[in-house]
Image (spheres, rainbow, N blue to C red):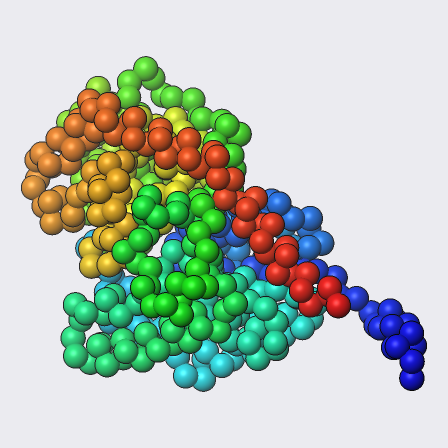
Length: 398
């Protein structure tokens, strides 16, 4: 057979259509936020998104192509305390369960002709992609894991080491690791990143991934001319003490307006408080705010910095990733931090003082505006989308 004939035969091989598959966790607001940020730079025929629970409903509300996948892990805790041990031990994806979820992911990949898998907060799609020889990229703000188990009992440490092994497999099975954050030295999640050479050499910083451009966000109307405090708390029961503390502070600081985004309810809210159990996007509330009170979730931090909003951060107790994020935000001069044990004072003096200090000080506002300018120049979502498109094309290029 001549070289010319070989060339002709190659031309008859059917070409794959590039398709990027995002499999994202619903354990936290940020995973779906990052997927939505990137998805807006793709045609509907080029992507498929997958999740479960409220993240799945959120994705469906944007009318992107999506499918449902099984939950891998559920966070457990109480009274502001995140319990690593109970979370691991209650993980439904252990042993046979994980294998079943991997098979589910493989079926989706094959059925939809996926040419690139992007995993955010999920292990199963990475293992599925490896078994099917499909390129895979991990999108994460956390690539170091063993420190997250150091505070727990010997039993949990033993299980934690096993869990760490799974995490290392998760990262080693991916072609690249995309970090949705500012490049060093301005990286919020820096303490949560591995210093292992094999991890670092495959790590790429793409910038904040938010589902909008800052100038596109239309702020909600403010209730009055008073400063507006927006608290975004979600619905994890162990955050209830923070919700109750904010209600008490609002009762004392009648010169301020408070908007709380949370599934918690109360019959004792003063008239300067508005509670929203669910909002499609928190950004319009953040943009209207003079100050935001929230946890130290990474994607929320990226949204606040992109909008240039000062924040009071109350990380979930013993959730080491959040505690590290909160510490970094303080080091970067954009936030103040409080711990749950500081909310024990019935008068809530510490919370009141921190709120007033952030409202009175201009240095936090100036520093946050510097980050907003950087975010506008980076165009993180577009940068990430371009990179994924190049990866997705590799299987169909020749």
